Amino acid sequence: MTTATQTLRGEVTVRDLSKTFNINGRALNVLSSVNLHIRGGECLAIVGASGSGKTTLLRILAGLEEADEGRVLIDGQPVHGVGTERAVIFQEPRLLPWRTVIENVAFPLEVRGLSRDEARKHARRYVQLVGLTDFVEAYPSQLSGGMAQRVGIARALAIQPEILLLDEPLGALDAMTKLTMQEELARIWREEKVTMVIVTHDLEEAIYLADRVLVLPKEKGGRIRTIEVDLLRPRNRSESGFVKLREELLSEFGLH
Amino acid sequence: MALDIEQSYPLNNSPSKTGRLRSGQVGPAFSTGVLGRLVRGGVQNVVVRYGSIIALAVLWQVSATAGWINPAVIPPLDRIWDALVNGFVNGPLWRDVAISLQRAGIAFAAAVALGIPLGLFMGGIRVVERALDPILQLLRQTSALALYPVFILLLGLGETSKVFVIFWATLFPILLATIGGVKQADPKLIEMARVYGARRSHIFRSVVLPGALPQIFVGLRLSATTALLLLIAAEMIGANSGLGFQVMNAQYNFQIPLMFGAILLLAALGLVANSILETLQKRLCRWAPAKA
Ligand SMILES: Nc1ncnc2c1ncn2[C@@H]1O[C@H](COP(=O)(O)OP(=O)(O)OP(=O)(O)O)[C@@H](O)[C@H]1O
Ligand SMILES: [Mg+2]
Image 1 (cartoon, each protein chain N blue to C red):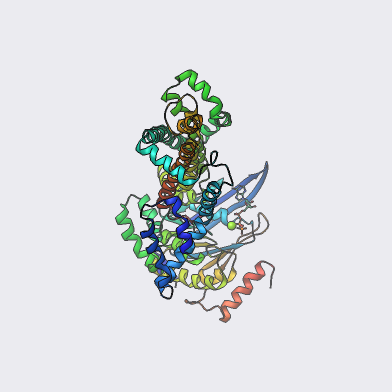
Image 2 (image 1 turned 135 degrees about the horizontal axis):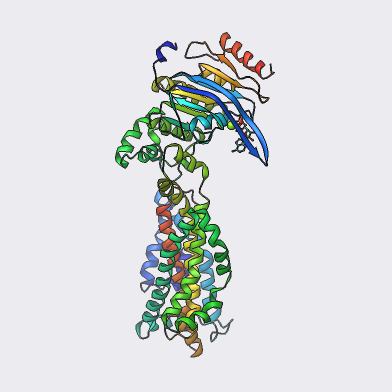
């Protein structure tokens, strides 16, 4: 399964990454000596208790946050700050309320210097990809939560990133919409051949989407655990292998 | 329904009273069809929206003509209307309206031209805002009217001091609203734009500015109201033209209907200014969920 993706771009290497925050004069060590390698085209899920540093790690990968020590390499090149080979999808869709669906998707393309018309033309394909063709001219206030998030995903894909970084992208959606969107994400990942790093607190979501699940330790200085998800796609949530992995992950959190 | 339409005439005072009323009465004939429902819905809307003002007008007219109130102090609406028509046809009212509009217009335009760019600048650059904020707070707490004598002293009793005092009072609502709008920009949206590589100027143009627009309009509408308020005050002191002068002058000469006419004219100007801004806002902020 993974052999075909070996040659893809979007390979991420994290070396000895540490991050300490200062909260009211007290040092809070969030990440210490994190080492990580993500293959090009891989889908990696990151789970962990609240406050374990998932978002922090993702923001450092995105270039929105500076690490204290260590570095992040993308395709062998050290990164500084944000870059157009990476796109971030946040928990909230973060759409510009004064732009229609298509204009929102076109936004990053305009930033890149495409003319309004060119950007719109290019954006249309991605609006189609997330199934919102009927809503191209709708404003964000006229969309449901799931639809808005899909616009955010289309916008991220429109710049054709090598790496898609997602921070609890489906966290705010209802259970049904969430399941549909998980299928959608699995399809997009397969079709667009991007490297995907997805932070989630939903273990099922992690197993459903990822090649590997990274479990950040609860206590500081603890070991990061990795669990391989060796299941055929498309995955079935009630299949025995799936259920077994879910139990294994749950026990990582001391739950059953 | 027909009664309501009739009652609205003293206000509109259409010359073709009876003819228009006939066409208004067609409504009930359609009452079964879709069109009928639309017409009735429309009439109902009009009644809800303007019913109270129509009732007030009727009450005014009736109590003045029936002598419940002293018509020498509060004349009936038709006499006010006659005085207005007379003022426009035979008197100087056109000139007064023009000069008032000019004073308020120049001052308002100047306040917009200075307030919005300055507000964007101050709101966009933190240090500037922090440095200038104390002065701003001091100045805006000082009533423009209290400063009018100072302006007269500095600029003389002519047009300049009048325009300036209006400008002064209208500047602050616009300036403060613009600063506030820019400062309230959603940091999450700014971060989103940053992720896609947008530079500061691009972020300002495509994220901060559109986001501040509704707030800027709040300031503009407040300023327009303030402009008319200050206009009257300025025209009551040492002026010999303008609507504010007419109010004072008519009262002085016991032309009470004309005085009320000028007052109503001022109210109308305020309504028109507000509705122009409202229309502009609706066009520019179509995306914003409608609010009252
Ligand atoms: N900008 C910041 N300044 C100070 N402290 C921060 C900052 N960002 C995060 N932290 C701290 O770092 C720790 C990890 O935060 P982070 O957001 O990475 O957790 P998380 O794993 O994403 O949690 P959750 O599952 O609740 O989203 C928290 O204790 C938080 O207080
Ligand atoms: Mg988080």
